[in-house]
Length: 260
Length: 247
Ligand SMILES: Nc1ncnc2c1ncn2[C@@H]1O[C@H](COP(=O)(O)OP(=O)(O)OP(=O)(O)O)[C@@H](O)[C@H]1O
Ligand SMILES: [Mg+2]
Image (cartoon, chains in turn yellow, orange):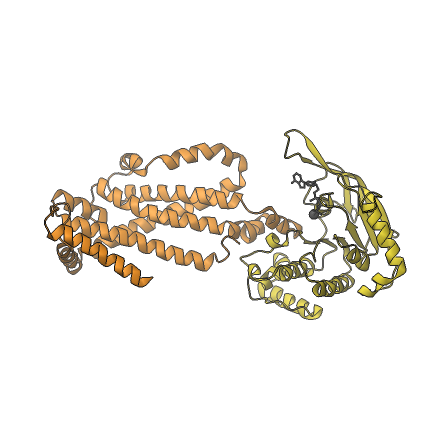
């Protein structure tokens, strides 16, 4: 990954208290180092439970590393503006706010008047050509619509860092393709340094400058694959013979060299 | 549904009439239905019923509002201060197990036999209910909801107002509903025990010592009706405000 590093992860380790045995620890991330240039889009893939969400929480400054260091633009994470789509998107939307107010929330917390924030939310949806029943409460929406709302909320304040934890997991195939495009457009429009966690290798390759494959827990970088293709990219690039090779490489790295 | 309810009411009334008019139960224990109706009518006309209702409701609402405010504030405080909360759990459970009637004498000693003692007792009971439920709500905000606020760099005040309080609201409403029903009980009991001239409890007590059983029944029915209506009103309010309960 070329360029000046913006997000710098150095020797990061995170241990959780082991739920099955007191005083024991469970290592989720093991001396992970990663360097992401400003404005880059990287995808992270890895087996279930390897530590991907844990890494994002560290990048957001929500989780303190057990050892090692995370720096964003040279300072501790949590100092820069951040958009985060939580893997658990259902719980992340506030059920006491309408969908529109949920999307507008970041601006609202930034001190914008409520009406102004709402208007910005409406405009964002118009720009991205996204339709949602904005006056309803989030729990009345489908899983996919909720993910969409969570995604919009994560970008409305044009954050410097965008962290996406499986943001498209509940979407059907056509919406997924649409949203994949939307994510790329949003990323290009706001220039956020973006980290996407996904289980979908095609999606990982389609949108990213770099795909990072993690080992099974504890997470370490198993392989890093650059994707130097022009943008915007549609799903058609997935038929590119080069992409097929990259896909295989990522797959092998993830499974630890085993052929599945 | 409504028809079934009316039918059930008729059956109960018929049962009561059969017992009372046949003379198989002494009117001292079970007055004849028409005697209760007459007594109710007299109370309405003389204004004594409305005065009693007003006196009891004034105590219920004052005590509930005072106690509720203290309980919610204390609940937020304890919800934040986990260490104190954990330490206080057995004490709260203990206090909850002490019947308010058992500590009424203390209120009597502290405040005399006037309204203050009764309102203090109601406030005490309400505060305890509201505190316990508010702590529960504040302490059990799902982590992701707090993390959302953290990633948006919300201030502690914003976290409280935009996340913690709304999230605790369903549980706070459970507190309100429990506390207000309980407040009626404490009001009537304290009106009976701390000699009073006004209020439904006083009316029940005074009627009973004069063997005016039909007036006792009027008081009982009024108490039940007030409790029922308050519960209905708070349930409606709850359903309207806390539309996301259990989502
Ligand atoms: N709060 C916690 N306490 C204890 N262990 C935890 C905690 N959170 C995560 N873990 C453990 O740490 C490891 C990494 O978890 P993490 O959520 O980062 O995985 P992930 O890569 O995001 O998985 P998935 O693909 O399923 O989302 C897992 O083995 C998990 O069981
Ligand atoms: Mg995860």
